[in-house]
Amino acid sequence: MNGINRNHTERRCSDRRRFLTILGTTAVAGSVGGGIAPHLAYAAETMTKARRDQLSPDQIIELMKRGNERFTRGGEPTPDFIAQQRATANDQHPAAVILSCIDSRAPAEIIMDLGIGDVFNSRVAGNIANDDILGSMEFACKAAGAKVVLVMGHTSCGAIKGAIDGVQLGNLTGLLAKIRPAVEATAFTGHRSSKNLAFVDAVAAKNVEFTINSIRANSAVLRDLESAKAIKIAGAMYNLETGKVDFLG
Image 1 (cartoon, rainbow, N blue to C red):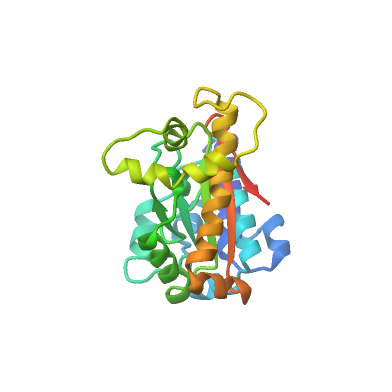
Image 2: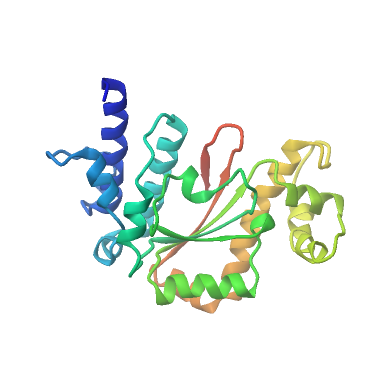
């Protein structure tokens, strides 16, 4: 392995171990030493209940941010997904549940460098919440112990454009109707059109906010967990052009 590839491997594996090894808040920004072969350590580590339970919601979000930093740097080695699959085959202890859009360019686990077993992921056009998704989130947090609910929208979202244009197409019509309140509530001084990407992105961010409000309003289970500080409900926007995830609020 040449020096450049070795540095990439050691940096990514070190970050991965910091995700999974509980060292407190300083571990998030610190370095990890030791003589363990980096690739083997990266392949073998998976999220356990003990590791997950010692992380705070804010630490979990910080680790997502660091994963996105690794993604945007590029040049990182591919993780051993087979090793992760085998390690999680009989048990799972995800740290978060992510609600994101079905857009093929915005796979949450990849853009935040998450492994198998790290998070639950629910995907639907326009990252809107309905009863089934709320039930899934309640399972993830109340029954399975996840500590973060992350609603992630993205730039140039087709569902947002469709809601702006009032598209009608079978069952999609009802889905887009759930986004319309965000369109109407978005304060914007420019041209309010689906062809104006600045407006589209402003509506997408407002839609994330509205979805979070909907989660709190329609799930007493999640609302009570958040009030008890057992979980954190957060929002984010993914930029398709830069690859960066911006956490809102």
